[in-house]
Amino acid sequence: MPGLIPESAILDDDEQVLPLQAPVPLPGRGRQPLRRLRADVVAIAGLLLLAIALMTMLGGSLVNVALAIAIIYVPIFARVMRSSVLAVSTEQYVEAVRAVGAGHRRTILRHVLPNSVSATIVQTSLAISDAILIEAALSYLGLGVTPPTPSLGALLTEGQGFMTTQPWMVIFPGLALTLGVLGFNLVGDSLRDLLDPHSREG
Image 1: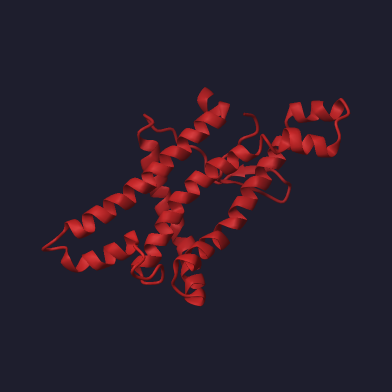
Image 2: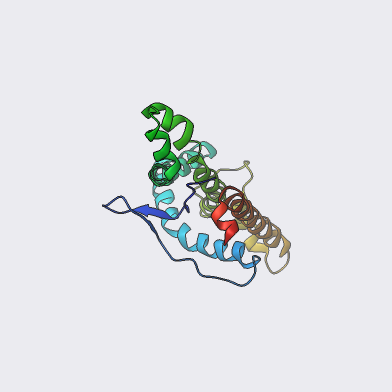
């Protein structure tokens, strides 16, 4: 599907799409999810600070956690969608549609938007893994969901006092958290390969 751009793309003042970092070739596809997990852990630090500030104002509950995560990610999704729409609008097939006399609304609804949502779909799967980490971190710090609502972060907090006698109380929640994040990263990478023909060619 044409027009897909990476979720890390931003726009400068001249409306040019600029990648935040150049791709680094790594031997084998198996390292991609691990590299993304490492990048997620680094990127989550800034988002976590904002989430902590929001939860301090809103109070701990499942609804407030979801609301805080939504507030954080709405601007991110808006920027990804805007970048994707601007990139698709410059494609040759869009210019050809305009050249044959298609109206502005038809061009947007039939050609620009359908080819722009693929970037948002990929971003959604990757954002879910970040949301899992944010929720777990907030619950671990006591700012997230409150008992008896289950949370991996809360399980880690409860189990850290028994690490010497019952280490599985920390191992299994930590393993579930890691596998969940890796799983959604794998889904995001697969969706990118499926929806972006350029990545398959590379």
